[in-house]
Image (tube, rainbow over all chains, first blue to last red; front, side, top):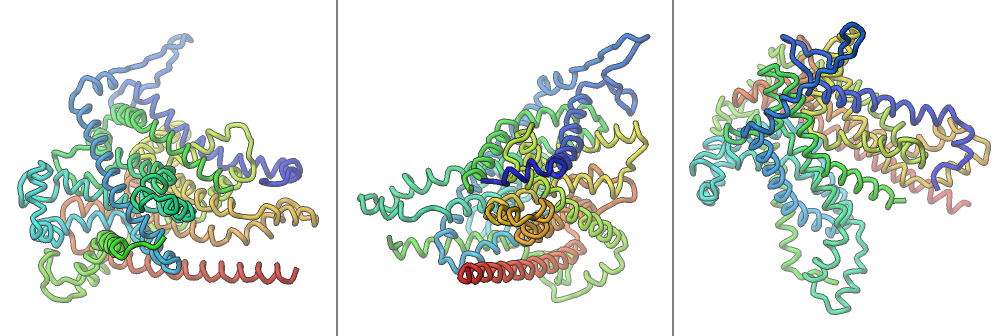
Length: 310
Length: 280
């Protein structure tokens, strides 16, 4: 099915280069750095540098591992609460993206086929223009007397948010859990829409006709046929939103507040403000542990989707 | 099955609201940039003074120049490495460590950037201590962006390679083409649109990146997003609106015209294929 066997046999060197070059690059610049982070997370700090974990004392190897950072992470409530908060905000963002993005992708996929390329382009375009600038724009929109802030006040949404304890006062929208989740939902919405759209637009609509012939209402057919068939798109989209959100730094920094500490910011502060490299490395390792299961799920769905295209 | 009218109107409404949500900040930035008031929410009349001020903003201009350089390098190298990786995964179904390779390739797509940035930096620092190379700056930022860009480029090229008809390569092979010739004469022209999209996407990704650049930059190597980010952290800044409008305009025009070109070439290719099929 793929390359004819003669090509893989006939060009041993070509094959080696095609696989070897990107493989080597990823090993050196993706896997090795991560192993170094794990090493540094258990290293001692010597003034400004960290000590090697393996040293030689008169020819005898001495292994100095320090798990203090991990103990701190477990004992200190602040870290634990920050991890939980990051998971919570990422989960809420993912659900909101799904709630907005699924109907969006669905209606896109069912729009007139001549219209669809333009609709797709319109989703991609904000995604191409700077993410940093779009997040920054929300800052202006949500400050006092910003356009979005005025609109939210006009429809009385701020009082609802206040009652849900998402903002500290009816007037204050910026630097709150609300502005943080709004910013993350806004930024990651296209990541949810695109895989869902590509999945829903390929669906065989005759299945729905068959369901209708057999007496299913449109609503039942939607839940029993469309939703289960789009499972791969839902998983892919959710992981594309959830995983980066857990470690998001820019959005909490620009739109979040003191009460919305997230783990990406903690890592950043340990590194840039406290200069505590081993602690930053420990936070990174712990963050990877949080996302390793969703990451594996994402890889599995990606591989299956590509296989299915064959 | 005919959708009831209510359903259709609900669909249109949902799409309109969704697009309004996606475009509101972009429209706001553009309008703010022409507002003759340092406070963006109060309209005080039309002005171009923020654009004029941009011309004297040496920090921003130096950042822009560096960012464009890095974005260009990133886009070119990402497409090369990403294409190699895509070919490796699509053409060679079995090789040792394929699962690890596929995992490492797609992980940067979702991995929080703080992790990638921190780990790359710690490795480069260790490397620099051992070898005295590389200095933090353009080179190290480029490495970081390349890691990310390669993953995106590989996804785009992979999707295109999957859709190719493998019989074309087989036919060329039967006619005596060497594997290298098959690639340059048959495969490459057919994936050229995907390569173009990948180049554009990785270019804009690099131009936009804050986190990796912050970890990997050194003294004197401040990219434009880092300048924008440090100003945005302090509060609202009209100069940011002006540069934002310029970037948005250039990128939108670039992306729209590039996709028009790509779509046109695709149509021509399809009609040629159809004509060839009729002739045969």
